[in-house]
Amino acid sequence: MCGIVGYLGTRRAYPVLIKGLKRLEYRGYDSAGVALITDRGDLQVYKTKGKVADLEAYASDKDVTGCVGIAHTRWATHGEPNSTNAHPHYSESNNLALIHNGIIENYITLKKQLEEHGVKFRSTTDTEVLVQLIEYMQKSQNVDLLTAVRLSLQRVIGAYAIAILDKSNPGQIIAARKSSPLVVGIGEDEFFLGSDASPIIEYTDKVIYLNDGDIAVIRRNEELEIVDFNNIPLEHEIKTVDLKLGQIEKGGFPHFMLKEIFEQPECLKDCMRGRINVDQTHVKLSAIIDYKDRLLAARRFIIVACGTSWHAGLIGKQLIESICGIPVEVEYASEFRYSNPVITNEDVVIAISQSGETADTLAAIQLAKQKGAFIYGICNAVGSSIARATDTGSYIHVGPEIGVASTKAFTGQVTVLTMLALALAKEKKVISSNQYSMMVNELNAIPDKMEEVLKANDHIRDISRIFTYAHNFLYLGRGFNYPVALEGALKLKEISYIHAEGYPAAEMKHGPIALIDDEMPVVVIATQNVLYDKLMSNIQEIKARRGRVIAIVTEGDTSVKALADEYIELPRTLECLEPLLATIPLQMLAYHIAICKGKDVDQPRNLAKSVTVE
Ligand code: G6P
Image 1 (cartoon, protein in one colour):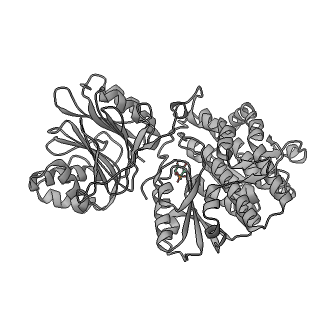
Image 2: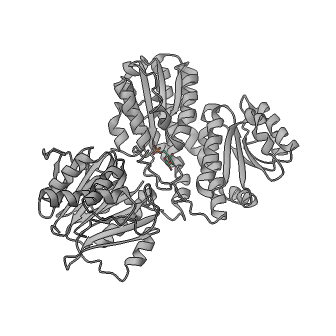
């Protein structure tokens, strides 16, 4: 969702804020703004529709002096993306400026009450209600800013991370969070704020992850103070962030997405490092060692996730059911949370989330916890809200993912799920030592095989040029590759805006076959596994209707190649590990088609990387 940056210290705030916004632009990019207390003591807000580069152009002839400021890049929820609705929002007197990530759910009631007291609004956002409420509290109760913030937040229902500047107190920023992430960076005589640590790590590796209900009071030349809504001081642990600048830069690639696609072999090695010992044929996940009894006693697993993570969950279900014999359900977190699910304390909920901040997944965890389930998290972002809300879990360790369309996080999630299934099966003694060692060895070989797949990049770029004309795509797969078909279709629609549907191949004849004509590209994952012959028949059916087939085949295949219009080869692997290879050409296909269509692959329209609202 939106990205928040703040700075108070001895440097010029503006360049720090702009650089920080660029690092957070993946969170939203329909408008951007900055508020500074300038050297002249003015509280200046500059904001504009568009991206951070548009903000820079807009502010190029303005006074951007000052060593304290806050900045925001927006993903609109309430009010269309225009300059008026962009953040920061001034209070009526222009003495306060506030930025916000989240949703104020009771903003209509609050706005009405404030209007009855004569407050005039400029925007149609929920956020402006908050800054007006804080100023109203300040004036009507004759209190300082911190008290006004506390009193206001007590009346607010919703989710927020906020930061606020007060012209009359230029040495201070107040920030608060509830259900939206916020990190405070602590340097020498300076403080930073960020929705995540990426805008901060260039300056300091010391951070505090705020908890829900925390209000941080950042004051020049003073220690950081954190209080709750009742002004009770709270202790906080300063953490050291293990994030390198190179991990959040493009490293010579034209886009983050392409960099992240190509990083996958190394990422999977990082994901498996210390967890797979091929010599001793051993998979070791600390969560399983620590919570073995609880996990082995599970009556069933319920996987909750959204988007790409949900697709990884579908593969996880097949892995866990086929290797461990434990029943698994996979639910969209957004549906699960409102479905009054039957959950007992014999259930284990596996929450999968790259960002660790997805609001629906977090709410699903809270619900399952209340009902007594044990929660296992699979996250990428270390220290994220979901990672902290779970009972235990495994990080995927693939490094920051910045392209909005998820790539390396997906393969990292599938890798962790594979290790989880293997470790559980071993503990349950339901896997033969032959099968176990074969799987461990083959999983360990996947990064090298991924390198082979990545060599097809130029070939896939050529294929994508042929199909850029298409308005619709169908993706077909079966078994372990059915979720890969869903994921391939999602990638294409996210970044190229071409309508694409993923389907279990055999279901094609129950509807989608009606769509097939000589303009319809159909991507078929037709690798040589137990369902190969069935997929051959599906391809025949498509060709009989003059559809255009792009086939993903096992190297050495001849039969599918003879039928398909285009094909991409994959090294041979175990069927249950094929998703780790088969997904890569589909990521590349989506990438190149989007590039051919001139789309912004890293920041596709209407999407955001981290969805911290319902
Ligand atoms: C957004 C992102 C997707 C992601 C989904 C779930 O829609 O654009 O790429 O798969 O959220 O996010 P999570 O961080 O929970 O995996």
